[in-house]
Image (cartoon, rainbow, N blue to C red; front, side, top):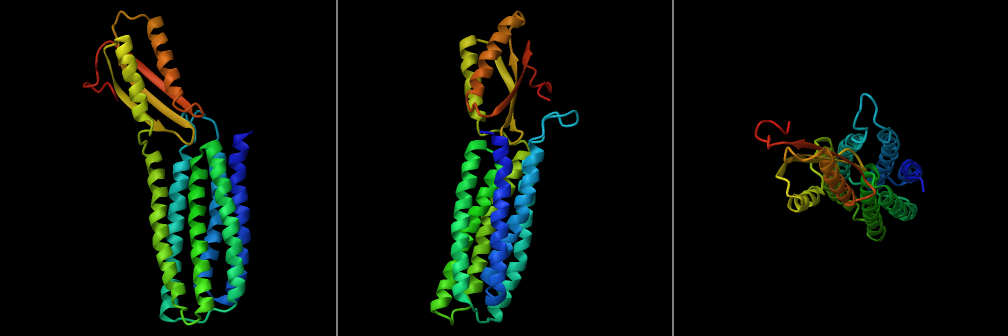
Amino acid sequence: MDYFKLEKKAPIVAMSVAFFLAIMKFIIWIFSWSVSLLSSAMDSLLDTWVSVFNFFAIKFSQNPADEDHNYGHGKIEGIAATIEWSVITLSWFYIIYESINKFIYPSEITHLSWSIVVMIISIVATWWLVYYLNYVYKKTENLIIKWDSIHYKMDLYINISVLTVLVIIFFFPHLTWIDAVVWLLIWLYIIHEAYWLIKEGTNLLLDRSLEEHEKVKEIIDKYLTEWKFDSYHCLKTRAGGSNDKFVEFHFVMDPETTILQAHDLWDKIENEIKKIDSSDNWHIIWHADPYDDSNTNGCK
Protein backbone atom coordinates (compact mmCIF):
# COMPACT_ATOMS: atom_id res chain seq x y z
CA MET A 1 0.00 0.00 0.00
CA ASP A 2 1.29 3.49 -0.87
CA TYR A 3 1.13 5.24 2.49
CA PHE A 4 1.99 8.62 0.97
CA LYS A 5 -1.14 8.43 -1.18
CA LEU A 6 -3.15 7.33 1.85
CA GLU A 7 -1.94 10.34 3.85
CA LYS A 8 -2.97 12.74 1.07
CA LYS A 9 -6.31 11.01 0.54
CA ALA A 10 -7.36 11.27 4.21
CA PRO A 11 -7.79 15.09 4.37
CA ILE A 12 -9.66 15.06 1.04
CA VAL A 13 -12.13 12.53 2.45
CA ALA A 14 -12.44 14.56 5.66
CA MET A 15 -12.95 17.79 3.69
CA SER A 16 -15.71 16.24 1.58
CA VAL A 17 -17.60 14.87 4.58
CA ALA A 18 -17.25 18.12 6.56
CA PHE A 19 -18.43 20.29 3.65
CA PHE A 20 -21.48 18.10 3.03
CA LEU A 21 -22.43 18.27 6.73
CA ALA A 22 -21.87 22.04 6.89
CA ILE A 23 -24.23 22.74 3.97
CA MET A 24 -26.88 20.42 5.37
CA LYS A 25 -26.71 21.99 8.85
CA PHE A 26 -26.80 25.58 7.56
CA ILE A 27 -29.91 24.87 5.49
CA ILE A 28 -31.79 23.45 8.47
CA TRP A 29 -30.49 26.20 10.82
CA ILE A 30 -32.06 28.87 8.58
CA PHE A 31 -35.44 27.36 9.48
CA SER A 32 -34.84 26.24 13.08
CA TRP A 33 -32.69 29.05 14.55
CA SER A 34 -31.02 26.68 16.99
CA VAL A 35 -27.74 28.13 18.28
CA SER A 36 -26.49 24.58 18.86
CA LEU A 37 -27.17 23.70 15.25
CA LEU A 38 -25.52 26.95 14.12
CA SER A 39 -22.48 26.11 16.24
CA SER A 40 -22.29 22.63 14.75
CA ALA A 41 -22.68 24.04 11.21
CA MET A 42 -19.86 26.53 11.78
CA ASP A 43 -17.76 23.75 13.22
CA SER A 44 -18.27 21.65 10.07
CA LEU A 45 -17.43 24.64 7.87
CA LEU A 46 -14.26 25.21 9.88
CA ASP A 47 -13.46 21.50 9.57
CA THR A 48 -13.60 21.86 5.80
CA TRP A 49 -11.02 24.65 5.86
CA VAL A 50 -8.80 22.78 8.29
CA SER A 51 -8.85 19.64 6.12
CA VAL A 52 -7.87 21.69 3.05
CA PHE A 53 -5.00 23.18 5.06
CA ASN A 54 -3.98 19.73 6.29
CA PHE A 55 -3.86 18.41 2.74
CA PHE A 56 -1.28 21.02 1.72
CA ALA A 57 0.56 20.65 5.03
CA ILE A 58 0.95 16.89 4.49
CA LYS A 59 1.98 17.41 0.88
CA PHE A 60 4.65 19.93 1.88
CA SER A 61 5.91 17.92 4.87
CA GLN A 62 6.63 14.96 2.58
CA ASN A 63 9.04 16.95 0.43
CA PRO A 64 12.53 15.45 0.78
CA ALA A 65 15.46 17.29 2.33
CA ASP A 66 17.04 19.88 0.06
CA GLU A 67 19.92 22.34 0.06
CA ASP A 68 18.05 24.85 2.22
CA HIS A 69 16.23 22.32 4.45
CA ASN A 70 18.81 19.67 5.28
CA TYR A 71 16.59 17.91 7.83
CA GLY A 72 13.52 17.74 5.64
CA HIS A 73 10.17 19.51 6.05
CA GLY A 74 8.54 17.35 8.72
CA LYS A 75 8.17 20.17 11.23
CA ILE A 76 5.40 21.66 9.13
CA GLU A 77 3.28 19.25 11.20
CA GLY A 78 4.00 21.29 14.32
CA ILE A 79 3.13 24.51 12.52
CA ALA A 80 -0.08 22.93 11.22
CA ALA A 81 -1.12 21.87 14.73
CA THR A 82 -0.47 25.36 16.12
CA ILE A 83 -2.48 27.04 13.37
CA GLU A 84 -5.32 24.52 13.70
CA TRP A 85 -5.53 25.12 17.45
CA SER A 86 -5.53 28.90 16.97
CA VAL A 87 -8.30 28.85 14.37
CA ILE A 88 -10.44 26.51 16.47
CA THR A 89 -10.05 28.66 19.59
CA LEU A 90 -10.70 32.01 17.93
CA SER A 91 -13.73 30.82 15.98
CA TRP A 92 -15.60 29.77 19.07
CA PHE A 93 -15.66 33.30 20.54
CA TYR A 94 -18.43 34.06 18.10
CA ILE A 95 -20.32 31.04 19.40
CA ILE A 96 -19.94 32.30 22.96
CA TYR A 97 -21.52 35.58 21.89
CA GLU A 98 -24.40 33.79 20.19
CA SER A 99 -24.91 31.49 23.19
CA ILE A 100 -25.06 34.35 25.69
CA ASN A 101 -27.37 36.32 23.42
CA LYS A 102 -29.66 33.29 23.06
CA PHE A 103 -29.64 32.79 26.84
CA ILE A 104 -30.63 36.42 27.51
CA TYR A 105 -33.11 36.60 24.63
CA PRO A 106 -34.46 33.07 24.20
CA SER A 107 -36.43 32.32 21.06
CA GLU A 108 -38.46 29.38 19.89
CA ILE A 109 -36.66 26.64 17.99
CA THR A 110 -38.67 25.35 15.04
CA HIS A 111 -38.39 22.42 12.63
CA LEU A 112 -37.00 20.26 15.41
CA SER A 113 -37.72 17.02 13.60
CA TRP A 114 -35.54 17.99 10.64
CA SER A 115 -32.81 19.24 12.97
CA ILE A 116 -32.78 15.93 14.82
CA VAL A 117 -32.54 13.97 11.56
CA VAL A 118 -29.63 16.15 10.42
CA MET A 119 -27.75 15.56 13.67
CA ILE A 120 -28.28 11.79 13.48
CA ILE A 121 -26.78 11.82 9.98
CA SER A 122 -23.90 13.96 11.28
CA ILE A 123 -23.16 11.55 14.12
CA VAL A 124 -23.05 8.54 11.80
CA ALA A 125 -20.87 10.34 9.22
CA THR A 126 -18.48 11.76 11.83
CA TRP A 127 -18.13 8.40 13.61
CA TRP A 128 -17.15 6.79 10.31
CA LEU A 129 -14.68 9.60 9.60
CA VAL A 130 -13.00 9.22 13.02
CA TYR A 131 -12.70 5.48 12.41
CA TYR A 132 -11.19 6.08 8.97
CA LEU A 133 -8.67 8.69 10.20
CA ASN A 134 -7.58 6.44 13.06
CA TYR A 135 -7.01 3.67 10.51
CA VAL A 136 -4.87 5.97 8.36
CA TYR A 137 -2.88 7.15 11.40
CA LYS A 138 -2.11 3.58 12.46
CA LYS A 139 -0.78 2.90 8.96
CA THR A 140 1.20 6.12 8.52
CA GLU A 141 1.83 7.55 12.04
CA ASN A 142 1.38 11.01 10.54
CA LEU A 143 0.78 13.53 13.34
CA ILE A 144 -1.40 15.76 11.16
CA ILE A 145 -3.75 12.81 10.62
CA LYS A 146 -3.68 12.09 14.35
CA TRP A 147 -4.60 15.68 15.19
CA ASP A 148 -7.36 15.65 12.56
CA SER A 149 -8.71 12.45 14.12
CA ILE A 150 -8.80 14.07 17.58
CA HIS A 151 -10.47 17.14 16.06
CA TYR A 152 -13.25 15.09 14.49
CA LYS A 153 -13.59 13.04 17.66
CA MET A 154 -14.46 16.29 19.44
CA ASP A 155 -16.94 16.99 16.65
CA LEU A 156 -18.56 13.63 17.33
CA TYR A 157 -19.10 14.59 20.97
CA ILE A 158 -20.45 17.97 19.86
CA ASN A 159 -22.95 16.35 17.50
CA ILE A 160 -24.13 13.97 20.21
CA SER A 161 -24.57 16.91 22.61
CA VAL A 162 -26.50 18.95 20.04
CA LEU A 163 -28.76 15.98 19.31
CA THR A 164 -29.40 15.58 23.04
CA VAL A 165 -30.38 19.26 23.33
CA LEU A 166 -32.75 19.07 20.37
CA VAL A 167 -34.43 15.93 21.71
CA ILE A 168 -34.90 17.57 25.14
CA ILE A 169 -36.45 20.66 23.55
CA PHE A 170 -38.63 18.47 21.33
CA PHE A 171 -40.27 16.95 24.40
CA PHE A 172 -39.95 20.02 26.66
CA PRO A 173 -40.38 23.10 24.39
CA HIS A 174 -40.14 25.54 27.33
CA LEU A 175 -36.51 24.56 27.98
CA THR A 176 -35.07 26.56 25.06
CA TRP A 177 -32.43 28.09 27.35
CA ILE A 178 -30.68 24.71 27.57
CA ASP A 179 -29.69 25.19 23.92
CA ALA A 180 -27.30 28.00 24.94
CA VAL A 181 -26.08 26.49 28.23
CA VAL A 182 -25.08 23.13 26.77
CA TRP A 183 -23.10 24.78 24.01
CA LEU A 184 -21.14 26.88 26.50
CA LEU A 185 -20.20 23.65 28.29
CA ILE A 186 -19.21 22.08 24.97
CA TRP A 187 -17.03 25.08 24.18
CA LEU A 188 -15.16 24.68 27.46
CA TYR A 189 -14.59 21.02 26.65
CA ILE A 190 -13.24 21.89 23.20
CA ILE A 191 -10.76 24.39 24.61
CA HIS A 192 -9.56 21.76 27.08
CA GLU A 193 -9.10 19.12 24.39
CA ALA A 194 -7.56 21.52 21.87
CA TYR A 195 -4.82 22.25 24.41
CA TRP A 196 -3.30 18.90 23.39
CA LEU A 197 -2.85 20.19 19.84
CA ILE A 198 -0.84 23.24 20.81
CA LYS A 199 1.19 21.24 23.33
CA GLU A 200 2.25 18.55 20.84
CA GLY A 201 2.84 21.04 18.05
CA THR A 202 5.01 23.21 20.29
CA ASN A 203 6.97 20.19 21.54
CA LEU A 204 7.77 19.24 17.96
CA LEU A 205 8.89 22.76 17.07
CA LEU A 206 11.01 23.06 20.23
CA ASP A 207 12.75 19.72 19.62
CA ARG A 208 11.48 17.96 22.73
CA SER A 209 13.21 14.65 23.45
CA LEU A 210 11.69 11.53 21.91
CA GLU A 211 9.41 9.27 23.91
CA GLU A 212 11.96 6.58 23.07
CA HIS A 213 14.81 8.58 24.67
CA GLU A 214 15.14 6.23 27.65
CA LYS A 215 15.08 3.16 25.39
CA VAL A 216 17.92 4.63 23.34
CA LYS A 217 19.82 5.30 26.56
CA GLU A 218 19.31 1.71 27.73
CA ILE A 219 20.73 0.35 24.48
CA ILE A 220 23.84 2.51 24.72
CA ASP A 221 24.26 1.60 28.41
CA LYS A 222 24.14 -2.07 27.50
CA TYR A 223 26.99 -1.71 25.02
CA LEU A 224 28.89 0.45 27.47
CA THR A 225 29.06 -2.62 29.73
CA GLU A 226 29.62 -5.25 27.02
CA TRP A 227 32.30 -3.40 25.05
CA LYS A 228 33.89 -1.67 28.02
CA PHE A 229 34.33 1.69 26.30
CA ASP A 230 34.91 4.52 28.74
CA SER A 231 31.66 6.51 28.63
CA TYR A 232 29.36 8.55 26.45
CA HIS A 233 27.78 11.99 26.74
CA CYS A 234 25.75 14.61 24.88
CA LEU A 235 22.87 12.20 24.12
CA LYS A 236 20.19 14.18 22.29
CA THR A 237 17.00 12.99 20.62
CA ARG A 238 14.28 14.82 18.72
CA ALA A 239 11.58 14.30 16.13
CA GLY A 240 11.65 15.84 12.68
CA GLY A 241 8.05 14.95 11.82
CA SER A 242 5.86 11.87 11.73
CA ASN A 243 8.50 9.29 10.87
CA ASP A 244 11.83 11.08 11.13
CA LYS A 245 13.67 10.63 14.43
CA PHE A 246 17.11 12.01 15.18
CA VAL A 247 19.62 10.68 17.72
CA GLU A 248 23.11 11.99 18.39
CA PHE A 249 25.71 11.32 21.09
CA HIS A 250 29.47 11.22 21.78
CA PHE A 251 31.53 8.12 22.61
CA VAL A 252 34.62 8.29 24.79
CA MET A 253 36.89 5.56 23.46
CA ASP A 254 40.42 4.39 23.94
CA PRO A 255 42.58 6.40 21.49
CA GLU A 256 44.10 3.13 20.31
CA THR A 257 40.72 1.78 19.15
CA THR A 258 40.81 1.15 15.42
CA ILE A 259 38.32 2.66 13.03
CA LEU A 260 37.16 -0.85 12.15
CA GLN A 261 36.45 -1.69 15.83
CA ALA A 262 34.61 1.57 16.35
CA HIS A 263 32.58 1.05 13.18
CA ASP A 264 31.63 -2.48 14.24
CA LEU A 265 30.39 -1.20 17.58
CA TRP A 266 28.51 1.62 15.91
CA ASP A 267 26.71 -0.73 13.49
CA LYS A 268 25.47 -2.88 16.37
CA ILE A 269 24.15 0.10 18.35
CA GLU A 270 22.56 1.70 15.28
CA ASN A 271 20.77 -1.50 14.25
CA GLU A 272 19.38 -2.05 17.73
CA ILE A 273 18.12 1.52 18.05
CA LYS A 274 16.35 1.20 14.69
CA LYS A 275 14.56 -1.90 15.99
CA ILE A 276 12.75 0.26 18.57
CA ASP A 277 10.37 1.13 15.74
CA SER A 278 11.37 -0.17 12.34
CA SER A 279 8.66 1.88 10.60
CA ASP A 280 10.45 5.14 11.49
CA ASN A 281 13.31 6.78 9.62
CA TRP A 282 16.11 6.91 12.19
CA HIS A 283 18.94 9.39 11.67
CA ILE A 284 21.69 8.44 14.14
CA ILE A 285 24.85 10.48 14.42
CA TRP A 286 27.75 9.72 16.73
CA HIS A 287 31.11 11.27 17.47
CA ALA A 288 34.17 9.49 18.88
CA ASP A 289 36.12 11.36 21.56
CA PRO A 290 39.52 10.36 23.02
CA TYR A 291 38.40 11.93 26.32
CA ASP A 292 35.26 13.35 27.95
CA ASP A 293 34.86 16.89 26.64
CA SER A 294 31.29 17.39 27.88
CA ASN A 295 32.46 20.02 30.39
CA THR A 296 34.33 22.05 27.78
CA ASN A 297 31.41 22.83 25.47
CA GLY A 298 31.97 19.56 23.69
CA CYS A 299 28.22 19.02 23.32
CA LYS A 300 27.56 22.26 21.48
